[in-house]
Image (tube, rainbow, N blue to C red):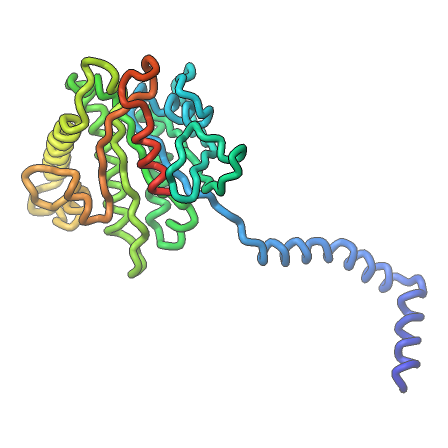
Length: 303
């Protein structure tokens, strides 16, 4: 049988109405688009923008900061207590020197886009934020996928002089720093994920009662040390004898240098976590206080 006769037989078979031909035709029509979609989805690289988490206790100014950066306006907007995360897309020029008020599209500048994630501050709603940091710790690949580049931790600089305000701010900060510490120490792969820096943004610096950045640092470090000591004692006395406590587990829950008498933010460098404290203010009269420029410069340098 030559090639021409074989081709003729195949062509006659395909053009002759029959059940096998109909089945083959329907299968081709239905399955080919699915196969094509699968093929294209495998070959297409999805781009995940880097993100900056904005965290902190309620009333610290998280939503006000994100709204001000999004609107590129020095005038703060009316805000509300967030119940869910609010994500906005921001941009900075390639060398990170542009102001948050610059319209990069209008100027034709090449922009680096990133996401600012305004997270809820209520105690019962913080799990998602901590889970996001924990997810980034599961592997180096996961850290690259989530692309969390930095954490901005907002505190009310005028409320830290009160015991309640200091305790509330330090407690949540302790959980975030401990999550970042575990992220580095419990990575299953031999290659550690990239470090995530933390900015403690001391808000309301325009107020007379606000603490300066240096005092915010020392107050928080002292309170974090007290929290560390209290939690360590709680671990030893929570229905477990002191001799039965695994020292490894205790070390896992110990923030900073294990066994140190005092806590300092510099201890977090061991876990590739740099902590900076910068004062600023979201609201206030125009020209009063340092504003948000230093915070924006810090964020731009991390994305």
